[in-house]
Length: 191
Image 1 (cartoon, rainbow, N blue to C red):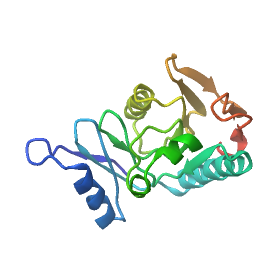
Image 2: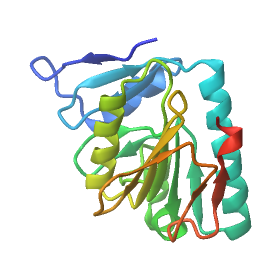
Image 3: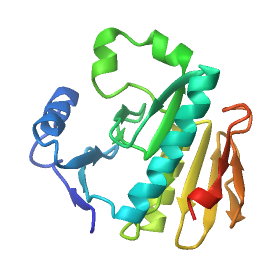
Image 4: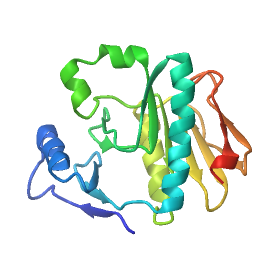
């Protein structure tokens, strides 16, 4: 399972609406678009990655339902980042204030913002360097807290707005810090 990148730059400049329609007409495929406009076709994940990702979504969703501080999105949620890239993190969250500031039309398309919090869960086919680059892109576009979880190496890279990356080896838990107050992810459900 490999991701494919198609350079449309010399052929066509897809508008945001055209990219959205391309995604809608090809629901069996998952697309992202980098800041240069290259189309990235993402391969589906295997069972272990999907299972771990669902655990993250469940835990984040339960916390959010209790706190009512924001909105949770799964890996199908698309975001139009300030740099022009279209990304779909494995799990993400925005504050309720950001959600409430969106128009009804904006809510039906790729959200024109960067998540406040997000998770990228490495699958066996993912490139660590490419995923790290993507995490830095999120950081540069306003993400306040992000976790890059590498199940194979039992390692987590924590990205914070304006700070250096922190690397944890085999953590038992991860904290939502002040971005997701009192949210703690038990990593035993991930490893």
